[in-house]
Image 1 (tube, rainbow, N blue to C red):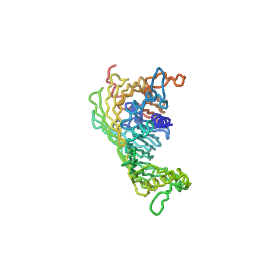
Image 2 (cartoon, rainbow, N blue to C red):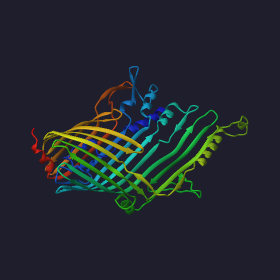
Image 3 (cartoon, rainbow, N blue to C red):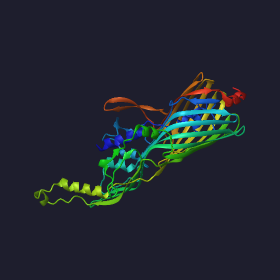
Image 4 (tube, rainbow, N blue to C red):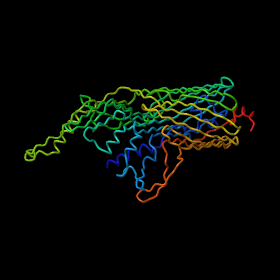
Length: 480
């Protein structure tokens, strides 16, 4: 049963599907959405309009490889729920905890146009950001139990999820023949949020007593009604969803001045010569202040558990052992009672740092490399992407490349864009498995990916006017 719980936790972390702009999109300048990764890189068209609701970007990150869910022993493969599975190997991967980060972005209104040496953009997006970190000690406890002298520290346990609208105005300036700069200011309107913060959370075992310490807080902005007694203690039996009229539900789901926030993107691109250029940017640097439907749940206390004292005479006096356990549960409930307040709180967005280089050996081909560093839930993730972009004709562009992270997880990318008259369709997949292997599970042979950690997908439709743009024309000097 313990290993089944471990399996559920790990598979949940390693198999999510979620969202943000695919990293492989960075060098696909024929797709206007590539400018979302660096506002200094103007789209290669004079005007674009994104078809409402069709532009969707996805991104999932985890530090768990698919290959780590299986181990080979005695010529057979074993899943992590089996007795033969060695958790020491997988625990080394969880030294700083098991991590899952997810994002989703849906473009509602997106358009931009060229104005002389400048490019202006307007975007209205709905975004969801979620992340969770599970401490490594939790997996060790589920596998080995809590023996004498064990200590489980839950301080690194973190959960954060937020949904919000993003209203963005972007400006790109071609400063001179070599340098272009750009920025994007964003007004954010929060929809819902949940965030946990654990200052202390430990369980220490011993022969004579167990020590429990907790100092944790959960901030929420959700349409729920939480009832407390005169001492401010939460009565969880009375927690219920708020009944809201249709008009209020619609107004909350639309961009407004509730739960306001602000964010910014900034970037620059420098052309060393006609073939080589470098660029850098910082995106999604901001915060949201949650003021509506806010609730703060707090628990802070400690408890020493000395065991259950059962005397022989208790059986003759009709005292049940289960009653003594119920008394302990009541004591724990009182000691670790949850108190509620209604204070506003602040959450941050998820910033990214991009550093890239691009070389154009031929008029129809570009070779690019980009590094992305992401900060979220006190963690840092690092990815490197290498791509080859081909544009044999003005109406089609094809991309292929590969990614590698600091843990050595190697995956491949694929993408394309096609212009059908003024309508453009694009699709990008980032993080596809490169290596596969056969695994025999309970006598059945299966074909599974070996290394698969992250996954990013971007797809959508645009109206494109003036698809070539000045940047393509400037490459006419090249000799094939």
